[in-house]
Length: 231
Image (tube, rainbow, N blue to C red; front, side, top):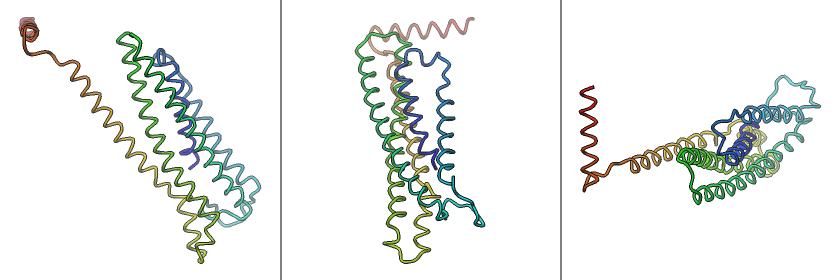
């Protein structure tokens, strides 16, 4: 659960680096991605280690749902830390969005080579895809965490039965259903981007078919067909 909360921060950092170094980003050997993954996974293990640092595990099983009383306080703090992570990720996304808009506006005002325009278009598309997915993750994961904190802190007020209270806590510890929504939203955004890109390419490459220019285009196409047939 922690990794899915932390990884979007890595996405935001990677996008900031990509936007800042858009001119050379596609040519450079970048190790930022693997480094961020290693750091974030290490933070995940650190979180779990701090939660159960003083736990003796004398019970018959280990479960994130039925947290032992000796670790319950740390586990509640863990949820608040996840909420802080989401707030920090929101700040990173806002900063990335502002930087992306500024970079895109500057690139539109300058006369650049075709290859640079292509690179900027790819960076812009990937950045917008990451931002949409990340903001969607913030929406669903933030709601998920807030409900989890609410269930853990105020659950006894609403649930008279211990079993019902335990189930309410378990839902927000073991069933991160928002991940399914993120996959659906990501696939939809990617489909829309590819469709828009294909439509733009088709409209820009289309040959004029009327008038004098259309006649010349028809003559050139016909000549190329005959040349290929002869060769």
